[in-house]
Amino acid sequence: MTQVSGGASLKGPSIAEVTVAIREAIVSGDFAPNQRLIEADLSASFGASRATIRTALLELATLGLVDRLPNRGSRVRAVSLDEAVEILEVRIGLEGLCAAKAAQQVTESEIDELLAARVELVAAVESGDLIGYSRLNQELDRRIREMSRHATAVEMIERLRAQSVRHQFRLSFQPGRAAVSGPEHVAIIDAVIARDPAAAESATRAHLMSVIDALREIG
Image (tube, rainbow, N blue to C red):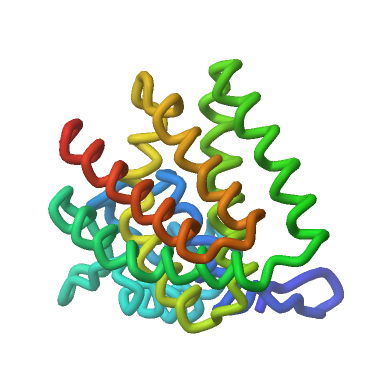
């Protein structure tokens, strides 16, 4: 609890809120691989109690984002290239399933949303806006997962994605990569809009295999 004037107190952020905040900091690269996570520093940064921070770090350890070191606290878990590739190989089946389900269940309003996203993606590639393109890619992937209405697959993907997203973020800024992945994402959009589950799954598989090949090249 945070004390305020008059003896009243304000409740700090919840464990869930702190867990999400630290997770996003790790995924975005604000905390580097192998960086020590000092509870006192995190408590000050997030305005949370040490107990809340400690519990959040335990939650993140179960997600594979944090290593708990006996008598030495916690650090950001470093995912090797080989492990990142393995994670992507597992994701291929799950992401393909979500794309196929999205193609089966996509609504007219969602089709309009995907058409707008398609225009933005193509424009970002053509203008060389890599930051915007990376953001649009992440948003598109998230929305297709949501359109699948497959809660179990989505939950599993989010756990896996968080562990390897730093490698893919690095890849998105490689010269020429957007020109390759842009059409791959367009193919996924077109298949979902066409309500073609097989084509959506195939396009998703082809895209993730391309990501794996590209990661191995820069690794």
